[in-house]
Picture (cartoon, one colour):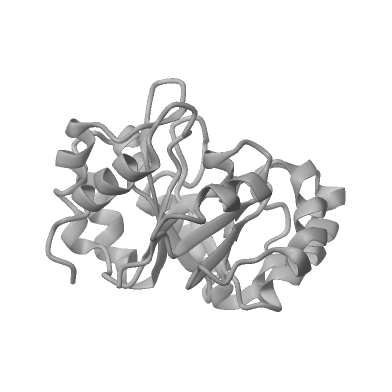
Length: 232
């Protein structure tokens, strides 16, 4: 069965308990617990023992996207709580101050490619530099980010041909000019299918669409249609 689910931050802003509850009556079997904002990390760590996550075959955690260099050691130490459960940790490369602090996560660390707002981590040659410093890390491929960076999807093909074999997770949504994660459009579905055959079939698909007024089941269907190409 394909691993398919949602980011808690997309379902319910800063309310992971509500997000988990929203998925109870669905067939969703994957979840990304979001601590994208620094203040969300400690409450998530504290809540882990009491959360019922038995529904999910795949669980990952999104690390904070911004913190100070002085705070980086604390962030890594808190994330160790998730690594003890063998939960992958998704990390924005532009958030890294000291690569050595992150290396001990090994293959549990998933580097995510970035959107147009960022000065680093968008293109294949930039990812090369990151994976040289973190050679045991794996990849969280954000298909909406790369479509925003290069709408032809040619850069997506370059990245997937080089790093497709180490993809553990895929982020999917549609991203507008303001970098908001919106519902997956028909045109996005068509573009995503241009490269979907290059994405490993065992990668977990995590929907990042902001679900303010979007139906969960329709977005699940759109995600499935987006990746309907023959898996490798």
